[in-house]
Length: 110
Image (tube, rainbow, N blue to C red; front, top):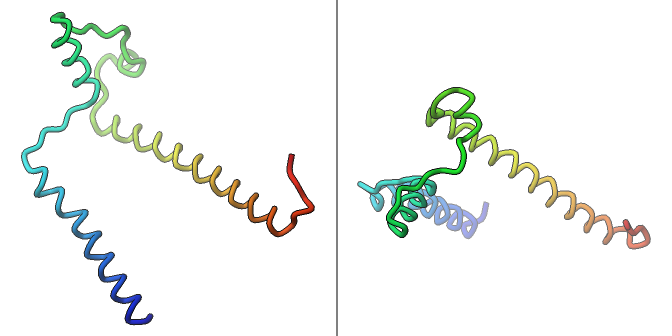
């Protein structure tokens, strides 16, 4: 590894460490709420009436209460993983198609 590459790697590691550490100090004492809570609060503020949901969530109705936070996070992560997998598959497929079309211009896929 050349000196130039070592310097670049060190700089990138420092930037990565800062991206990890700085939010802990910058967001100290911050409160995080879901968009559902913020939306219902805004509706109540604008209309002056308490917001009533149109329906109950299916899973919460099935189990008779709210899902634990860990389960909600797990389901969100699974959903994210599936989405990332689909997007990565499509990007790979299109990039491979482009590469093959450049290698073999006589073969065109319709």
